[in-house]
Length: 171
Image 1 (spheres, rainbow, N blue to C red):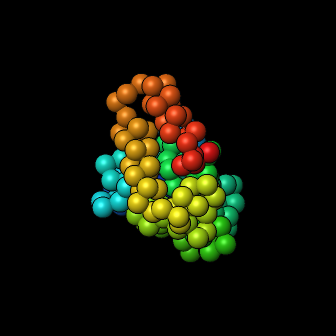
Image 2 (cartoon, rainbow, N blue to C red):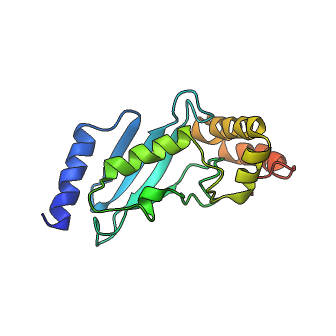
Image 3 (tube, rainbow, N blue to C red):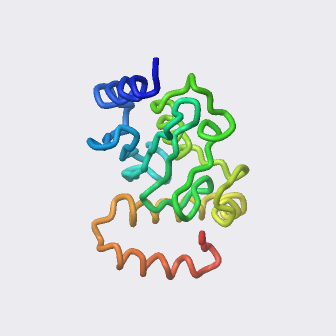
């Protein structure tokens, strides 16, 4: 099967039967670009949040893994300030046998089980390791502010900037 046919097949399957808690929105003009919404898993600091992720399939997909990044700000040890994600299935564990669905489910699982021992954001990971309850509280606050926000973004930014300038700063 050639690359474009595989992309079309995966896209059809994702739109027809999306994984629970995940909405995949293909770009109508670019079959390699998607906007994805991932619901924060229950019983996690991200519960109730809707996280927007940008997904791009390189020209050599599936030989090369998809490129993803969070567009929604998130307090997570495996996501850096610009939204890049540290996840084995899009790095060293990628194989062409994996699919977009697998990657999206892995991201959802990562929200449910952050891994501060393999961080991309060292400050958040340090907080997670030294005081997990405080880290989870900050993750909940960021989820409320950025993934469930009804407050204008500049007010949220000002409110959390004060928090970031404390010792619990993720940035």
